[in-house]
Length: 104
Image (cartoon, rainbow, N blue to C red; front, side, top):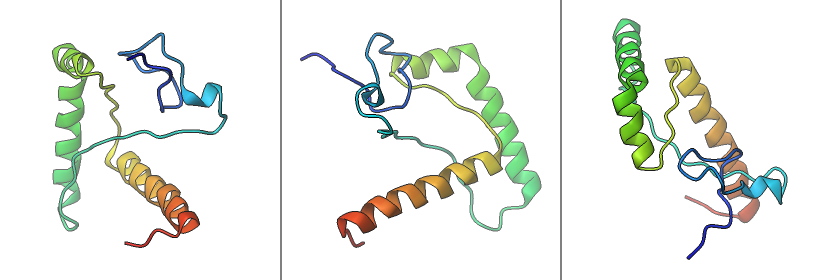
């Protein structure tokens, strides 16, 4: 088996010689992601403390290397950055589902 392309917009660290699909099909992007969430009414001070400590952990070269060994890229940011990502992804995939007539 040979990889032909990755579905992210840019090349993936674990597969630097494999081009993204968007090189051949402009606008194509399919990226998976994960993050850490908290209950809706969690106090902002706790959210900020968790965010600071998680970002610090993810900045650790040993942790980054462990993720890279699994083919994963690490991204850090604020809790509002993550909230925006969730909202943007929900909107994007909601449009796809509506266009295809997919119902939950």
